[in-house]
Image (tube, rainbow over all chains, first blue to last red; front, side, top):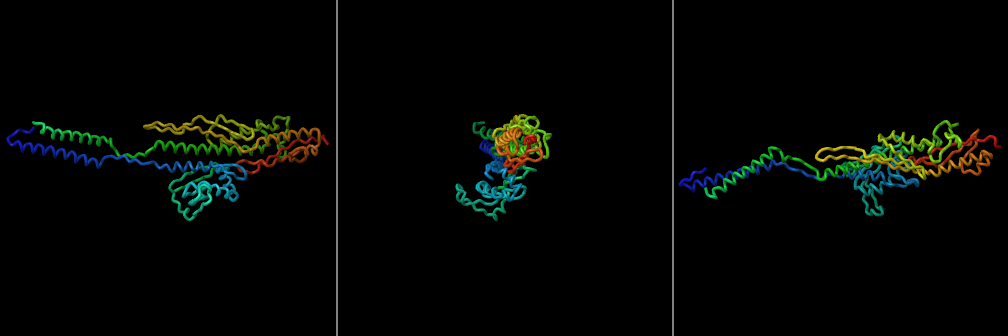
Length: 165
Length: 243
């Protein structure tokens, strides 16, 4: 490699300088390449859709007493579709006790018609005594998560949609 | 060359080697941009089962509606299998003829066949073993073998299977219906020896004598799905020989 001469000091200096430059170049290459390095973007999966599906399902399976008979909310919805005037109070009542307590903002529609919506501001969830509906705010519900279910009806399927923020 | 002279070039060469490996990794694209969700498989599984649970609930509801429709039809037919016993829109019960004999155990009605027909109209699922129970309430139960609904292949092979069973109980008082049949049988027996006027006093049935028939209308049997009264009427043959 390097020839040992009388000017040993200068030779060693050049020799070391070349090595240092080489190392610095390699390190610079590392730094340069690191900017283009692949990255793994990990994020937590949004499970809210799963939760809304589950809540809608459990809402439909909620037992409710109507006309002294214990039926499910799904049965009540079928009856409501058949006779809206007669069964609206019962459906409103069950919505107050369920959806309005669970969600801050939500919109429940049956065959495209919104039947329940609003912000539940409950001060006493245990007794459910204080529940105020803010319809104005409810009309501005932003669609973030929704769940749909085609409930078998007497004649045709009933489309139920729950949208929550 | 002394030891000090070897160190730096050696380090430079090693650095170059490592740089080469690093570049090689890039070249073969081992480190690529990728995004992954934490718990993606678990979430997919939960989501899948939630959706399938909704599907199973839909089947359960279809079974309920099919059962209610069947109940409506069964009562319309006067709890008989054939329409050969009909006269003036009334099912004429005859406790001696098998075709016109209403069975308290629902066996002689075509409830089962009718239910399966109506259920097939509402769902594509095929159930081979459907169990019926007509005690106190009408119970219909069916199970399936695990159905392979989706197969995901990849790093992990996942078979999504589900049992889509249903267990439906209709809120219909079967003992009340059986009581009506027994009452009708007693009235029929009474009519063989006594007049309608006499027999009707000891019967709880609301019947009238019209032409050659004793026509009975039963109230307060509701369709559990629609909550409406079911039109249930039948007739008995009047024994004209008895005064």
